[in-house]
Length: 337
Ligand code: PMV
Image 1: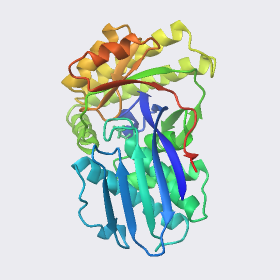
Image 2 (image 1 turned 90 degrees about the horizontal axis):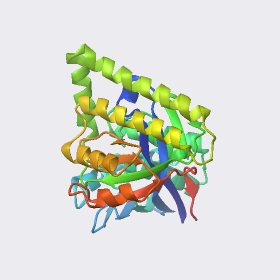
Image 3 (image 1 turned 45 degrees about the vertical axis):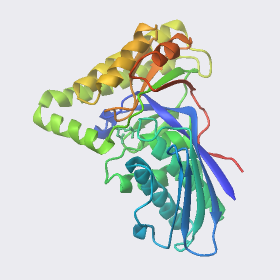
Image 4 (image 1 turned 30 degrees about the vertical axis):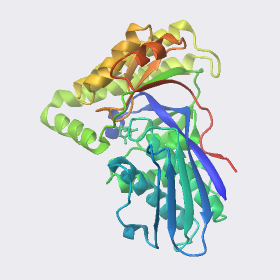
């Protein structure tokens, strides 16, 4: 059995604008998806998913993943997650030149589905890494990132940037601008995540921003302004001491930029009442800044704070289902076997 894990992420800055070629800075967090893979003697795929839903489920199907029957999955979200597992299998088969390879796959995840924390990217990255190693065709993390991007691109009908998959494969904080991706040095950023228990529809939210841009020229300026926030944030990080504790001034400035970014995302129509409530609860509890993370519509917010007050305040916020600390994870995809 070959086992790999990969981290989820939060966006410090830049979601949505990254779709239009602006830079973004996602940061890997210490919440992982773990995928265990065993090669089979036939070409069947058997997937057992734990923690993707409360009940978990198992499904087995033969041969081509295109022919997968409707999964007896507890929710639409879990069904969608299965599409990512299929896409990871296809990438691993292609990388190892083993088109008929079959697998028993077990997926476990600490990352809520579709909530802006990069759950699908983490499953795809860990899945490709484990399956290629199981077939004796181990890939470098950069190659895993590239294949994971292709998998997400296929599943999401071309509505995907490289941000989630590159960040999950490489770990740490990364900068993504179009096809140009790289790690950046940062101090230890103290994140707190609030989760409203729901999920946003990434495709619909991306399409909504697209039509707003087409209808109103100034919405394109809003997207460009998010890019300016990212560039400003990046210069602050470049001047900071990598690996050290961030200074109070840096936290204050980054937090201010996060607040600014959230305001612009709200203007683009991708926030929600529950996300806004959690953002305000975090700010009022003394967080340096707070914003939605990922596609929005529902799901998670990220706040910058190292004290426990933000987490506690979020837990007492009616709209918040769960709140947790999420340290920056400097490790990307890794072997667990
Ligand atoms: O919600 P997530 O984690 O899928 O993030 C989506 C981020 C977008 O910028 C809205 C889309 C993308 O592919 O970058």
